Image (cartoon, rainbow over all chains, first blue to last red; front, top):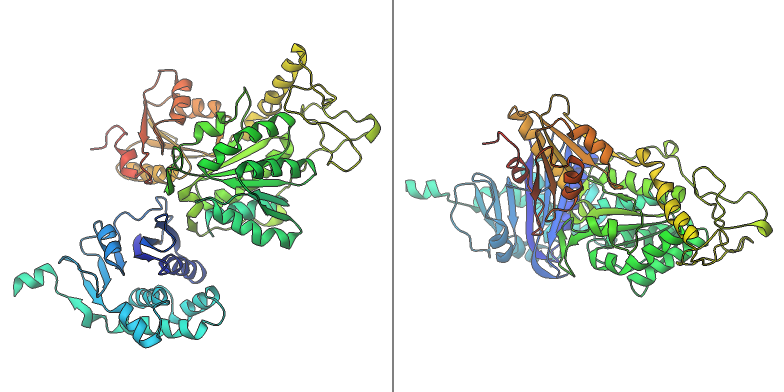
Length: 191
Length: 371
């Protein structure tokens, strides 16, 4: 894999930085790829736009910042507004259904991540793990079982079952992702 | 592993047993990690009421025989300056980790900068020496933290580990050296009896006096005033001269062993990029891109920035026709490069000071022959 840039964004407190750390850890543990994880957040502990970035590459990673993401996850409007601009033209975008987005050229999926997490798991607390599993399933960075191992080692005791369910939900969303795909600019014009 | 965490690992492997600090972004993970790990090795962690008290506690612990560390960021680094000077004057080994964020004042707490380069050199008053190390990777953070503790012990001096938010918060794959490959330095102990002990009686060639721990029977007085070999104040010009010269010479004498750096592609290069800390990551990317374009560019990454590695910069830079110094400030270390080059070679700055990591493109733009 050449340099692949991933940006997971949302509101502070949603746990996306942890999701980024877990992803990077899984890459270090179970692949021989190079990986870098960085984060950016405001002075707030909760709320505000927050992002975790992960770069995965077969080669040494010198410049550690994400410049033009290949993949963007945005769970909130604020995060989308702040972090969507430099997404690669044909990069993949996954946003929560409550986010208003502009039409674009690359593959774009509007997924009710937060709603389904709440409905199926009874809490939105694990929306980060759902998102992480969705990303991993889509890109097959590491096997599901390996991701589970890293997640379970990182989460608080007593929440293992909930997190396993979150991983399953994320994978299910990834498998059905096409149903959430919205039309690209070109497709719209063709009609 | 994260950069901040690597600093803690490096320090612990060098034998650190004491940490006092006051948390501040983006250095707080260092405190957090020391709090978790020091008790396990029988060490002590104290969260003090502020940065000044933390620095004072570190100096106290050092005199009591502990290897002591504190960590902070810009605003806290400002507060610690007075006692850093005191530590230098009484020759108390200690390490101050400063994870730089954008200043002045409280600035941008969660954004990277390299605005404290000159403060690390001259932040505390008086004509003092400074030993300052700048990691540009997580592996560096580990190794230089280890080195900082070792040098503090060996030279009886405060050593500053100058990180930035980018490196402090960066997580990347790092392979740590085997512990039995790491050589730990410990401060020198007196050879004679407690009764005849003179704390600053310098008999050794390395100009560094032994430092017994307080409470071990060797009694001595410490003061920030100029002092003679007994440790008591003196305002005699010859005592003043001798002490100040020795404080400098004990480091100058070993200067060449203190210059840590990396070079890339120097052979046949006619242009040179010089950088350090997080900026060096962007510089490395710029260097790689320039090489791919067929430009003859070399790269010098400095790990030791103070004492400024004049000899290295001269040796690497003297035959170039363009030197670019990349840093995240409005031009601090570039002044040293200009001084060394003495107008013989054009020196250009690739600078950025808006809380964002400098980009490879900004550095490339300062090279000749890039369209």
